Image (tube, rainbow, N blue to C red; front, top):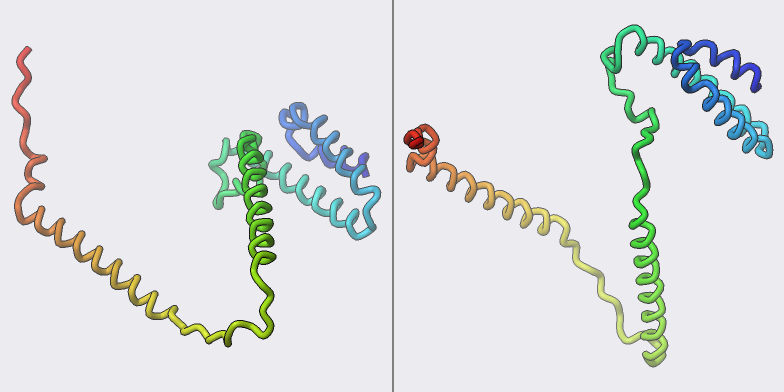
Length: 177
């Protein structure tokens, strides 16, 4: 498969192949080594994705060489390309550890509270069904946003009527030199 991949790399333009060819071969070789221990279905899927990606990449590079940078695309294909400038922020791992510690502490505190309460059998009382409050909440939110829109429109209407918008047409006096 490595020889077939090397032959298919010849589909890329010479300039692109000279810059990225060795790297593409080494990445394919590493990924192929990882798939050796997987099953047959996994290997077939891997080779299919790699060869289709290679054919698509070669055609895109030929079009890019003919037409320029990204002027040839009808639809953006940015989401299919890996961007090397993305780096996972190191501070995120620290924040994740802090959040995990907070969750673990909350669970331990809940266990301590549960252990401190006396065990009562039967339960303290019947659980009443909750009333459905989704539609009244939506109606209230709609009314709040509607009122905010009316207030904003009234302010803009009052400013328009007072002539404040004409202040932009006033020229400032010439600055003395």
